[in-house]
Structure formats: structure tokens, C-alpha cells
Image 1 (cartoon, rainbow, N blue to C red):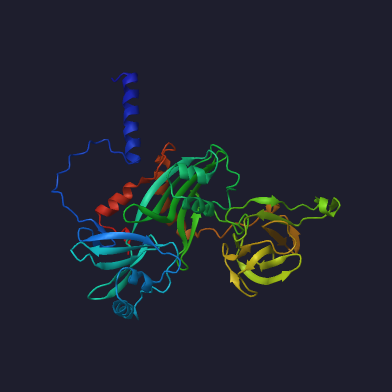
Image 2 (cartoon, rainbow, N blue to C red):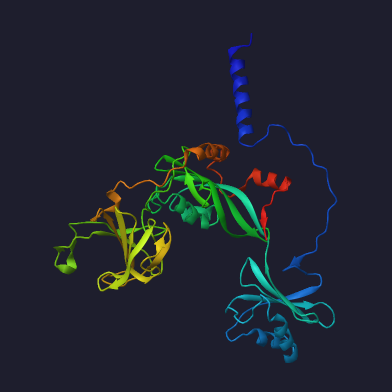
Length: 438
């Protein structure tokens, strides 16, 4: 008979091995990989062999044109004319060169040291390459985009943005998470100690240069001690609508956004007893909610509906009114510029205008007004309807997709400070799955 203490130790050991296995760490020692001969790959830039060319890097100056730049490279006018003629009818356009953007000239390393290629690269993800000698041609080239599945976590010290910066996580994650949790978390009121974990895909060019977050596959945000899971799922395959649901298949989206901006900072609330010093401290009811933001900040429709007013008045300035159904309507005041017209149908989250200071206002903000059954009310005191729930026939599919991501999230520790490449991505490469875009 096994002593009780020995049995307990063996049980703990077996449970530890099981946990390691579930979180992706194999207790079996790795075997030595066979060494393969090292292959020397020539160093290239913009697809050109650097052993053959020397490079001069410059930036577009005021007054620069493509022709002027070529003449400065000692290419005579007849050759400049021939190059421009060769580019006619192609996708390559050199008429508009942006001030301050970089370009490179590739010179041959022979005794002539001729300028052989001109490369204009204003964007990280694409560039224009023009051959300047002999067979003249141009090409607009998009760099191959590699999509990597990563995971990251963090603990809030002051703000989500600062936490992401300190953890070397792409700052686009701020907007991605704020959109997912827009209906459940006020990101201007995060508390110290709030924490998050996320599994996402990020786009890279040149192996290591990020060009932004691709999508969030799963997330966990602990706010005020309350855990909030979010799992990506295509809730309407016919329309291609993708929503985020918690572990119980409840849609995180609501019929209305919490406010009309991506980041909502309330500067003045709905208040029927508000007194204003400018008017002799008289009671002047404020039937809207003011959201402060800099001029030019996009204003979003808080719910889908039809635009019934898009106009200008002395008090409201540029404003838009949307009727969502027979019960609810919303209005957005003091816009710098309106983007929508009467009769247009807008979807939740669509940009309908930009923050300004038109009408009676002392600073840049959007005054958001909310009607229910014809009465102007405080939107933050209403029990607003949820978004359309997931269909019963899709619930089982959601559960199958959600379970492995929940397991991965639960295995991510909050001590991680940098993005970690997921094992799934490495396995996809081994299996030959496509993880790049051209």
C-alpha cells in the first residue's frame, strides 16, 4: 500500500505535467535537430542585389519633379523624355511626389557608375521602381505581407496606450480593444491594476516591420475585477458580419454605442437643472451629453438608421439627426463638417461628420442628444436593447471555435511584457498553410 504522503506528491506531479501539456509546454525533452548546410543568400533591397549597386538615399525637396531629379543625376533630356514615354499607359505615376518622402538611386559599381534604378518609397508597404537605362520600364510593387499570430498581455498602470508602449505592443491595439469593448468598458476610466490578455494577428513587411494589427481573435479584459472574454465569430455568414461574443455566446455589441467617438470623454452631462454663469446663473437645462475632442475627430453613428436631418442652424451649427426606429433617434451637434445627407442609411460606427466648433459653443466638442418615444432623455440612464443574439444553429459552431482560444488565453500569464508568437503560427508554416499576402 502506497503511503498517503507519497500518493499526494505523485498526484501533484501528474497534475503539473497535465497543466504544462495543456498550455503548450511538452514535458518530453526535445531531440537534437540535424544540422543543414548554411545557404548564403545575397543581400537585397527593393529586390536589387546590393553586391551590384551602390545606393544614394535622398528625400523629395520643394520644387522637385521626376524630370528635375533625373537631370540632377546627369541623365540628359532626350533620355528623360524616353523614360517618361516608357511609363505612359502603365500603373506607374511620377507626377505627384510628396515633399519629404524618401527615394533611392542605385548606381552601378563599374567604372561608369551610372544611375541604373530610381526607387520612390513613400510607403513602408509598397514602392515604385523605375529602370533608367537600356530597356526602360517601371513597376509599382507591393511588398509581401506576412501575417503572424501573436499573443500579449499587460497590467494597466496609468493608461492602456502607455501600457502597450511600455510592453512593445503595436499601439493600434488601443483602437482594436476599444472597439471590441466599446459597449462594456469606458477606456477613459480604466483603473490601475486592470489587466488584459489578447490573441491577435499582426501584419509585417520585410520580416520585422509592422504595418498594423490585422484582427483580434480572442481577448480577455479584467476591469474592476470583472473578467470580460471576447471571441471573434462570424455571426452572419451570408452578409459576412463579424461580431465578438463572450464565453456564453452573448454578443458584446449593443444596439447603441456608449458615445459618438472612438474614445469618449464626457465634458458635460445631461442635466435639467444646470446653471450657467454666463446667463446670470440661471437654470438652462442641458438635454444633451457633451463629448470633448479635438477639431477634426471623426464622429460615429451610435446605431444604424436613416439620416432625417443634415443641416446648419445658428445654435446647433452643423448637425445630423438619425432615426433608428420608431422608438429611438439621435442627434450630433457642432460639427466642423457633415459627411452624410438626408435619406442616407448609415450603419453603427460609420463616420457621419467631424468634431468642430460651429454654432453656440465655447470649445471643440460634439453634443450628443438622444430621443426615446419622442422625449429627449439621458442615454446613460436608459436600458438599451442588446444587439441581435447569435442564432441557435451557430451556437455549437461558436463553442467549437471558442474553446481552444479560451484555453490559450487562460494559459497566458500577465507577467509577459512583449508579444509572443503563437505555436499555431509556427505549426501553420510547417504544414504549408498560407500566412502571407502579396
